[in-house]
Structure formats: C-alpha cells, structure tokens
Image 1 (tube, rainbow, N blue to C red):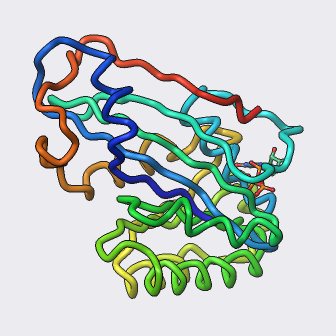
Image 2 (tube, protein in one colour; image 1 turned 60 degrees about the vertical axis):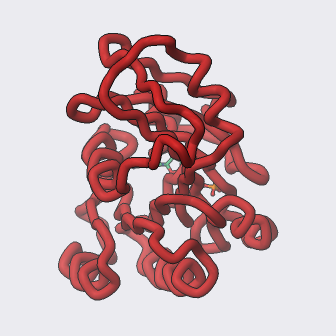
Amino acid sequence: MRFVWRCSPRFCTCSCSLSHSVAAGFLKRQMSPGGSSNDTGVGKSSIVCRFVQDHFDHNISPTIGASFMTKTVPCGNELHKFLIWDTAGQERFHSLAPMYYRGSAAAVIVYDITKQDSFHTLKKWVKELKEHGPENIVMAIAGNKCDLSDIREVPLKDAKEYAESIGAIVVETSAKNAINIEELFQGISRQIPPLDPHENGNSAGINIGNPTASGTRRCC
Ligand SMILES: Nc1nc2c(ncn2[C@@H]2O[C@H](COP(=O)(O)OP(=O)(O)OP(=O)(O)O)[C@@H](O)[C@H]2O)c(=O)[nH]1
C-alpha cells in the first residue's frame, strides 16, 4: 500500500492558475497509495484525509479504484503542492497501481502496526517499486495505528531496521490521533529535489502568504 507522487505537466496548468505572484520555489507533486489484500484497512485513506482535511472518520469506506486529493503546504520559503493518489488496498485493484506510481517522485507505503501480515505485504510493495517504479523514487514507510500500540505486532525496531536497509524514511503514525502525519509529509518533501522550472513549464512560484488545502474528491 502506498502513496506516490510525481511531477506532471497536467498539473502545471492547475498550479500556474493558482498564482501570479513571485516567490521562492514551487514543487508540484503527485502522490498515490496502492495496495494488495493485506493493504486494505491499514489506514491509507485516513492518513490522506488527516493530512488534507485534518479529519478522521471511524466509518470510512474502502477505496474503490483510487481517489485524488491535493494539499499545498509551506516548506521554508517555498510552497509545496502535494498531488495525492490514494489507491485501493483490495487485491482486485492491484493491477492499477503501476498507473499511479510510474513517474512519481515518492511513495508512502503504509502498514498497520497491529498486523504483522501488513508488514510482510509492505515488503512486497517495496520490491515491486524497486523493480518497476521510477529509479529515484523516494520511499517512506508509515506504521499506522500507533494509537493501538498496546496490541502492536510489529516492533518499531523491525521497521527501522528494514527502512534503513532500503534507504527509506520510516515513521509511526496515527491518523486517528493526528500523530506524525505532518512529519511524514515534511520528511518526504525534504527528500525530493526541487523541480527544474523548465521541466514543469512554470518559472514563477506561489506567494507563501496564503497556503491552501483542497481535496478534489472527499475521502471521508
Ligand atoms: N485506531 C486507528 N484506526 C485507524 C487509523 N487509521 C485508520 N483507522 C481505521 O482503520 C479502518 C480502515 O481505514 P482506511 O483509511 O479506510 O484504510 P485503507 O488502507 O485506506 O483501506 P482501503 O481503502 O480498503 O485500502 C477504518 O475503520 C479507520 O477508521 C488509526 O490511526 N488508528
């Protein structure tokens, strides 16, 4: 299960329309989570929902196919726009995942700290990303539901060791209690190199004075 994001000319147009002002830099990113059978219910949509809307829904529905949301956040002197694909965890949607991670700048691979199986599945996703994903994709591992640490099955130490072995960011999150969600995205943001302005067709930035959050489709 994962989120990915990428630079996309399609989004240059949207982003340019946000601003006529001049500021420092401006990154455009698109991101998507993916999944397989042990991905379902780990909290991918809830993480996106918490990040974009600062909202948590106990009765959130399983994702069908994928949903897309955006959020723009200040980062130093820049505004970073996250374009987020939240893909379904159900096995029947697995084959759609490459559509979302190809050309993406980063992926967030989510497991549930209370389910050892979901940690095994995470490793399969990492393997797939390494074999078929973009060469320099930034990978972040999110051990979600850390509010349930009393019934944890995956020790943080295991996640840290694994993340270190593959050069990924790792953080334990709770979409429910808003723990480490911002930190997760900030960590990813720091690891993605700035876009070449010629690459995205937009040399102007966005005024940092008015960051916005928007969802193109509600996740909850
Ligand atoms: N306790 C706790 N429950 C959570 C957390 N995040 C999500 N949940 C719950 O876990 C269930 C599944 O959450 P989703 O966000 O739909 O999981 P998902 O990985 O997107 O699932 P799919 O769309 O099927 O792939 C829901 O009942 C959420 O309320 C969390 O941080 N803590």
